[in-house]
Image (cartoon, rainbow, N blue to C red; front, side):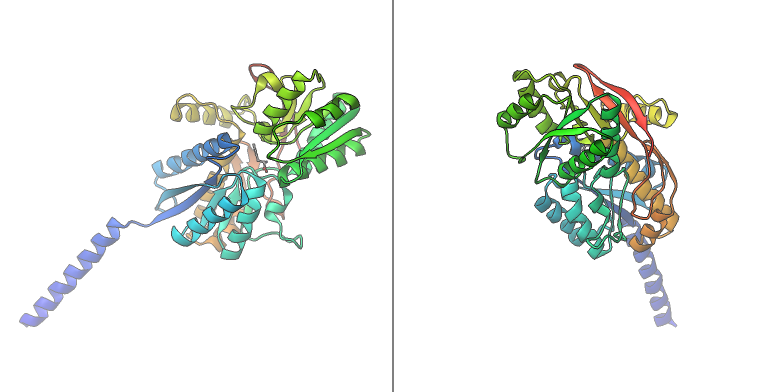
Length: 378
Ligand code: PHE
């Protein structure tokens, strides 16, 4: 009798202890945010991190997802393949994440996507626009990889149609041959622009390490094009447009979403145009609410497209987890495929290649601001 009492008392104690232990290590859902916080394009990383964390904080304030709080694991993947691969392996193998938001740059997102696909981890890139991010080499769709943005064949077409509409009959293309995004967007622009009757009067490549563009700009001056297409990131755009101004080149420059940065030199790029995902001046109420909440959270900062899309991508991921009903990457990927989500950058549904079908905006750079010019639906 006595022994039985002791045994049942021990049993109750053990139950209590395990319940307490469980409460101390409450289950969380980990979401990795892989973004270039250092390196050549740090504004991309900061905006992406801040947009993603804002979405996570909002979900946590509402009780998390599937009753669990969401834990962000932020890593600096530097817009570069090797650090991106190291960061992806670290968050999967060491931190045990099943979900990755990132990267920004296609040349980092493509190697991450191969790891995510092989390890069965869901990846959603907010902003990587190169078509190959979601595709295997044989053209089939990666099961676990998604994006929240349009792709470059569309972005290049929008840029080319706009250039044609502006009456730009001749274009000079400058591109970084080692950057998947820049090379892909340059090709997409060239194909669409020549198909619309435009003439390419020069095409020159450079590398990401170049800082002196005078040889190429001398060729631009000789060719005297109506427009110079430069679909690179803001750091290169700043160098090239400043040197072009010094050379007396007056043709406007045009580019893509890579121009989107608070650190774009608007004075040097003034008069230029770029295609992008979103404008904070959009009058849809969802945009106004997002811009106001972001400013309130981050000391008055105005969210750029990277912040908006990181917010959207994180919300999409969490909505898919909720819809899947389980912290299970395969189920979440299946739920994501069937999702329709009202996002800041537009209503998102995925096509067979896991790409959202959504509009692009055309913006123009002025010396002290960026102006919305056009919105183009697919
Ligand atoms: N689209 C770019 C890429 O694929 C990244 C980018 C998106 C940069 C949006 C700025 C703004 O590399």
